[in-house]
Length: 261
Image (cartoon, rainbow, N blue to C red; front, side):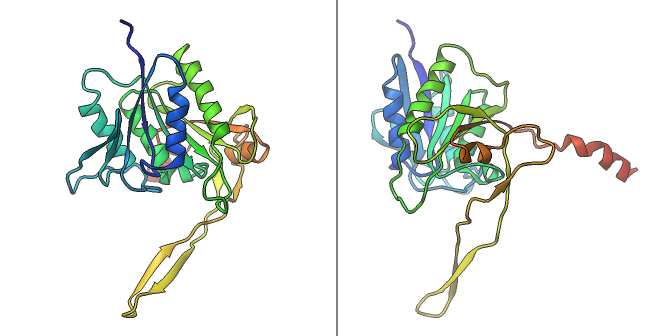
């Protein structure tokens, strides 16, 4: 009997997130695919590529082939899945998302969604992070285009090959409020950041802070020779960015060597 194509799904919005459930439904519409979900029990947005080392973690069964990891991060979910659920055979593909909100530019370094894909490629599993750019005044969001795009990508990979070498993953961002869009290969743009925090006081007068949200403000990178993820989204394209885990600044190595000597 032919083995089904195995897809591991995780996210950083938590196991009940609409984007995750939409992704699972879309993948289950494909033939000869087995979907296993291991997602954080709670929202872990902006947790980065973090592992939990200071307390034990526990799988909790939600449904068939669907687990939440009690207070785990996306990286925890992938890491533990490979040493428990997928001991005999690795997943053929890992998909992290569909995230509620964009993951473009340097936001990738904060992103738990991207980190799920990072953890996958560290274990030689082809991986995709997918995010839906949206207006947060709409708390639900529409994931219909994201579902269509992810099925197209999965079929291209399943019936062909993964387009990237080891330790590289696809970071996909879906433009908002449209039902059709072409894909465009992009690089990660330059994000402008502010420092937005809000102070509150409890009944005893003790201060605590909420970190605020920044508007999406980007610019192209000089000398990039391509289109940035944000430019593609603004033009109504699906942005597909190849991301690698090598953070070495190769262009600076010669200058640094001269500086040391």
